[in-house]
Amino acid sequence: MIDALVCFGEAGHVQRTRRGILALKEVRAFRSGLDVSALSPALSVASAGTAGSKVPVTAQGIAGLVRAEAAQPVTVSVFATGLYNPRGLKFGPDGNLYVAEGGKGGTNSTIGKCEQVPAVGPYTGSPTGGRISKISPAGVRSTVTSQLPSSQTSAETGSLVSGVADVAFIGHTLYAILAGGGCSHGVIGKHNAVLRIGATGSAELEVRALSGEAWARAEGGEVREAVELLLVARELAEGPQFSAVDRADILFRLGVCRYKLSSIATAASLFDEALALAGSSELPCDLLRADILGWRSRCLSWWCPRFAWPECRETWR
Image 1 (cartoon, rainbow, N blue to C red):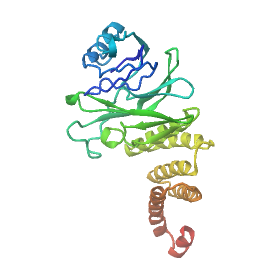
Image 2 (image 1 turned 90 degrees about the vertical axis):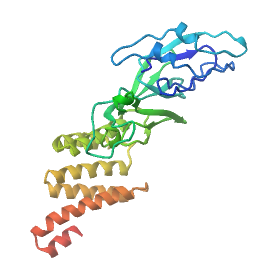
Image 3 (image 1 turned 90 degrees about the horizontal axis):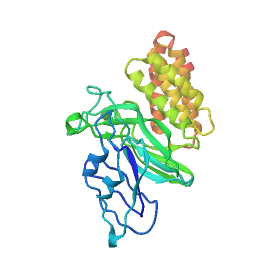
Image 4 (image 1 turned 30 degrees about the horizontal axis):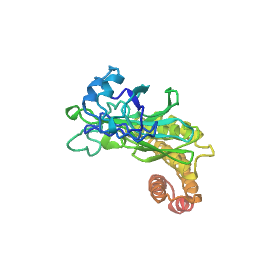
């Protein structure tokens, strides 16, 4: 784990090491043309500690690993600390530095639930812990979100962590790419994706986190707990930054949970509402519509044998 972000006194580029221990790149504090070569793995000895420990990063320790062009003097200082497996980073339009972090990994296993990753697996993971940090020009770190998945390879392969892989800006909008999610990585219900971070950075991520955790709980048999999480997500998704498809997806998941609790009529009503929302959107959602129709058919199969078929068909057409 890298605990510190290093700021070179001249323009520099910090590349990834083979094992991914150091994954800082595009450090552009200044622009005098210094070419910084790939840092030696020896830096991991200076900056990476065992789990639960932190070894301080010293300017003297790093300076010895930097090769200057044309004998230019190099000054090195620690700019920010408290990062967990930092990956990509970008300066935002607000002047702050945004850092994607893999997080600390997790302990949840999905062995027997889905296909596992060969060679470096089985992974273990957590639905939260992957993080995006914002670092001010003064080097003060704050959390944009820590509600993204984090996972790690097997202990035999070094427990290498994946999470938020990179961040980018289009105008004033922050995007992040996830690399630590999915059932194969020990995280059910949270898939790798490109996320758009809202202006506040909270509501969209909170809804995604609640929905993903609810789906995982439902898969694990904790259906009532899943319903409670989805009800919170449903309320948050009424905000203007959410699309009809976002709301339809939450209603679909809520309908599945109600079906599993044998509340068939409630489930059918939720599926109908989700289908109407999906149909009203101009966004592509064919897979979601197919899922909704599939589960709605289950309600039909459960309901109709209990009543006269003509009346049932009229009600469910």
